[in-house]
Each structure stands twice: as structure tokens, then as C-alpha cells.
View 1: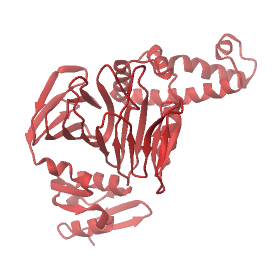
View 2: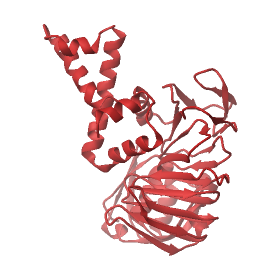
View 3: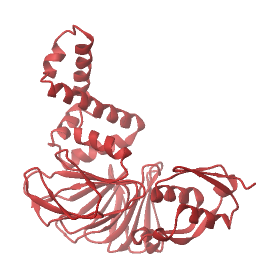
View 4: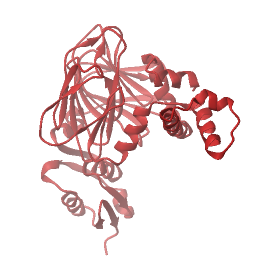
Length: 367
């Protein structure tokens, strides 16, 4: 990944294709992710230097006369190769520990969702662009005739959120999900959004502007339809489940590696084999979470544990080998069930003990 592309992104001058290439590079390896994190730290260092009116170019050229100047010289050199957006640094630092839903605007501002009041959202020019509610945000139907500005919405564990994009597309976001999307879609080109986590899309029809969900190493392209996408970073797969219309899943770097889905099918992209596997399913099972339900069908406990962790914002440590081998079927209403209720229900099938300390649940063998 070149410093030129990073700097273009930092200056908000990168094209949609360049932005996608950057995100694919970040997700390609753990080393790239570490480099990305270091880049954000370097940007902050350079920002501090700028606030102190320090010319980073001059610093690079000058010989260090003390430890402080030497430190700033290192930061400036690092910036040349790895600089990245401050908005994403501050956003990630804040939202990693925040229990609230956080929206990072394209100009670096952060918006939080809480309370019970309706408010408005303004862009950097002071124009009214959206209505902001405690559990959803609705953008107005406008298009950009210039550059497209992207916002990033992060939903923490234990929360869910709904978003209506400027084209009328409605997106339901599950717990532990991040969505990057245009503040207003452009007149030309595709409607691109970038997903980490799980979301249910009800896409507004627009034949001239295909809607593309970029999720890990797979893309899902539609014209107008209802479908669910699950692309949590800890999973080696991306699942696209179709309820209405049609969607096409394809490899991001190789569009010819593609499959077209019809309703009641799920396509699974496999990171390791680079293959897409399709099978017939009951799609309502995969969209149950949008109605406040957890639905399991021959689901292994390891998967159920991850879902419980995201839904209730807890950590589960399973030390019971028998439970790890079990699968379960059933439906649970989130609003009517606690973590204890769910565990007690599972215990009826496979006996185990558990203890809860703050947000950590430890499951052990029965005594």
C-alpha cells in the first residue's frame, strides 16, 4: 500500500475504487492492520506538531538538537509513509470503549445517540441533511454533484440501530456492526457502502445506480431487493441471504468469481478457499434479529455464544467440552430474555454450571 493513496484518502481526494482498495489492503493481513493502527497514531502526533506551528517538512530536514525535536522528526518521517485520517483515529479510540452508538462524520465530528429527543444533523456547510432519533437516523433525498463524503456509524455490543440512506434504502444494523456510507449519494457511479458486522438491507430501486455492499473479500450487488449480510471480522466467511429480488455475490478482486441468488437462498463466501457456496434456506430465520429475536436451527453452541456476546454485551468463556459439541434449535425474544434465562434454558438439554462476574460469564462442567 503506497503513501500516495493514504495521503489521498486523508485529503478526501481518493476515488471510490481507491477507497475500496485501501480497505481491502487493511483487511488482507494482521500486519496491515497493525500498520494501519500505527499510521493513525502517527497522524495524531503530526496533528499535535501542526497545532504547535511546527513545520514537519523543516523538521525532516533539520538535524535533531534534543530529544523532543528528534521525537518530532521521527513522527514526521513516519507520517510521510503512513499518514491516515484523524477522524478515524478519534472515532476508533472513542467507540472502542463507548457503550453508545457513535457516528463519525466526514469532517471529523462525532455524534452520539442517546436520550429521547429528536434532533437534526448538519453537514460541514451548515446544511440540514438528516433527522436524528435515539434509535435511528433518516437522511434526506438529495444527491451530490461534487465529491461524495462518507460517514461511519458504529453500533456497539448490546445495541441495534436503523438507518435510512439518502436514496431511501433502509438498513437495520445488528450489534457489533460498523457501516461506512455516503452522506448523500452521487449523481454518477454506484451506490457503495462498506460493512463490518451484520445488516439487513431494503434497497431502493435505481437501475442506473447499482447498490453494492463491500464486505471483507466479497461484494454483493443489487438493484432493489431485501437481503441480509453477515460479515463479522472474527468469522472466515461472508453470508448473503436473499428474501426478495435478486443479488449477485462476487469476489472483490475477481468479479468473474460470482454467483446470482434467487429468493430463499444463502450464498457463503469462504475466505480461505475463495469459493462461494449456495444452498436453499428459510430466509426469515436469518432476518429474525431485525424483529428482536434470536433464532437458532441446529446451531452449534460456539456460534450461539458469539451471538449472545454481541446481543447482550458480555464475554463468554466456555470450559465445558460437552457443551461445545452441542447444537440447538429454538427462538428467543431478546426483550423478554436475559442472559441467565437463555443459559438456564440451554442447561435443560446439556447440564452445565456457570458463574457471572461483571460482564464475564464462565461456563464449567456440572458438579
